[in-house]
Image (cartoon, rainbow, N blue to C red):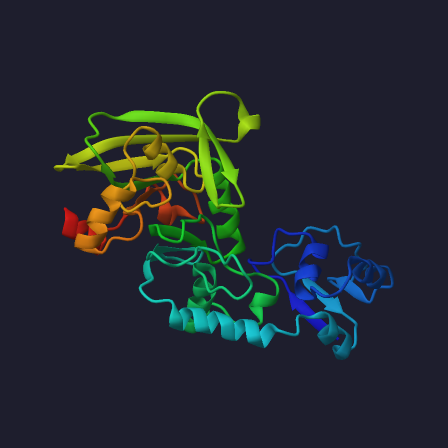
Length: 326
């Protein structure tokens, strides 16, 4: 017999969902059969799996250890090693802020926010590896809750990313992000002279085969995903402008395609930008990807248990290549 003690990271979810995480190789029918036979109970009583768990609940599994082991992921040790490998191999990631619920990271360029293929090492794996290393998490807890990244940046975009350490943190950050209550600002170097503040709107249509998007400025939502970007010039240079943009919506490649659409493509952006202009900077400064970074996060009014984040602003300095060109 084994027991699962429900803590803060497990509370708030249905019992059958948690059992599915604890023994992911077991079919749902197995759990419902064991629940009917009282081989799995909640707080010593019969349950049907639809109960919402609270902190302090105890799930008892009157099952043979061999049965539980058979339905658990056999690759668990390998996965834990993968997290440790990500923490060791992915360099340059900086912890900007951390509390019991969230961690804010400064992601360098060249690192995926979340893995695209099974063998990838991403910021998500690094986060779990970091929490295991500092002792905020143990491999047993990974059976029922995995910390994760809440917002994504493209591989070659630097800057601030929010990670959830707890289930409560994950739920609250995802609520705020989906409700557009956390303001996200980016800075970039673009071609030409941007002279005024402007708000851009349109619909983004993705080409999955080429991993590109194109912009449809008129029409309705059926043509693609609605996007909205607000931007303003910060400083002018001979052939470029330092620009700050706020993402009102957040879609892949949104800033890059929006700025290119108004004749101000990002420096270093070979997918949507000016190749000849980019090549000149590549030869002189070694720039091979877009000069864009997520520079600032602004939180709204927050209540307990997130009072530490109440109206907080997190900002990071210019990356090295920006500093060289500025």
